[in-house]
Length: 359
Image 1 (spheres, one colour):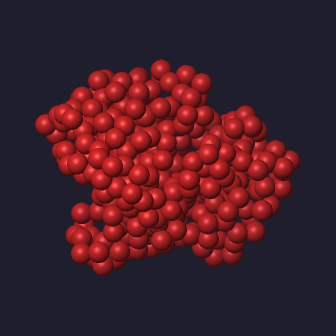
Image 2: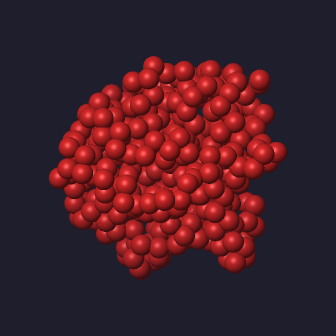
C-alpha cells in the first residue's frame, strides 16, 4: 500500500491569514430537522467564514428553501450548494431559483452540481448524468440566467423556447462541479467556474486534482487561474473522543462503503483498495447495497469505521489540536486549493480552530 503523505514539504505550507478562505457545511450528514441551519449559518458568519455550504438531501435539506432562509440571516457569507443536481429540476425552474436567490442575497449564491451514482438515478427514474448532459446543462443555465432565449434538443431534454421573463440586477451565480476522477475534473476545468473536491483526499491527491483541472482549462482556452478549487476537509478539534470518532470515522464510512465509489476514492489517494472491501464485510455493513447512512445509526457507522486503516483518516482530514488543524489547512492551500470547505463539524464547533488562525 502506498503510504499517504501527511503534509507538503517543509517551508511550502501557507497558513491562512484569516477565515475568509474557509467555508463550512451546515447540517452535515443526515438530519431530521432543518431549523438548526439558521443558527449554524449565523455562527459561520460571526466566525468570518467566507461561505456557508449545504449538502442537499431530499426531505429536510432542500437547497432552494434553505438558500432563501440562510441568505436572510447572513449578510456577507456566500451560500453554496454542495451539491444539487441538474436532473431533478427543469432548467427554467432551476435558473429561476438561482436568480431569485441571487436577487435575495445580493449575488451571494454558488451552485455546486454533481453526477452522483447510477443506482440513485435508476431508483428515481431519471437519466444518469454523463459528461454531455453536465456540460450542456451548465451552458443552458448560464444562458437562461443572462436572459437569453434557449432552444435545445439533446440529452438534457427538448426545450423549444425557454426564457426567464424577469431578472434581478445581479450576475448569474458561479457553477461548480463536484469531481474525483480525471474525466470529471477535466470537465470542470473546461466548462465550469470551479470544482469541489471530495472529502478524504490527501493534500497530494488535491495537488494532482488541481493540476488536472487547470490543464483542462488551459486546453479549452480558458484562464486556469479563474477556475476556483474548493477542497473539502473533514475537521474535528476539541471534541469529545466519541464525537470526534463520529465526525471523522462515521463520515468516512458513508463514502468508502458505496460500491465503486469507495474504490475510486481510495485509488485517487494511491491506497490499496482491498481495504475498502474489508470495510464492507464489517458486520454493520454486510449486505448493504445502497448508502449505509440511510439504514444505520451514527453509532453503528462509527463502529464500522474501525475497519478503515487509521492512517487513511489521519492523512486526509484535519483532526487534533486547533494549531494542528490550521497547519493541515495550510497543507491543502499549498496543494493549490483556493478555498477550504470544512465538513463534519458544524460552524458552532469551530471557534477554537478559527481563533488559532491568528496564532
